[in-house]
Image (cartoon, rainbow, N blue to C red; front, top):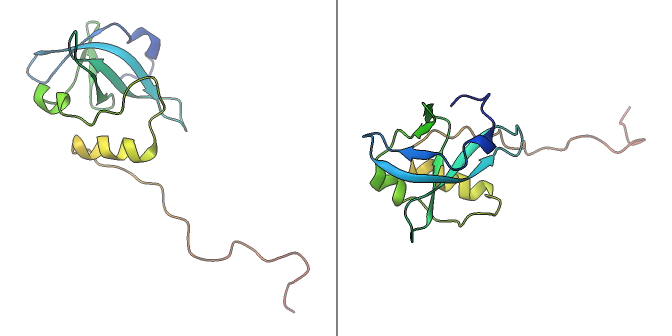
Length: 123
């Protein structure tokens, strides 16, 4: 995904699946908490349908439309977390697994003490 795109400019754009079939219209864009980079788009999949979350990283903005490299059926079957709320790390992980994307988890905290209490140094 082009990172120089203003995420507000994605809202209202049409989205298409890997076969060129229309998925719907982008309702919201979710930014990564740590970097502020657009990470997910919520796409309204129909007039009375719910929003489906799609990853922006493997997607492309082509001539003003978002092209998502997944089949429409997979997108419509994505976990539904509702829009307008923050995605938790667990919800993001579920979405990454749903789309079969590799998740780079931050390294875990080592199981050891981080320091000693001041004045308790051993000679």
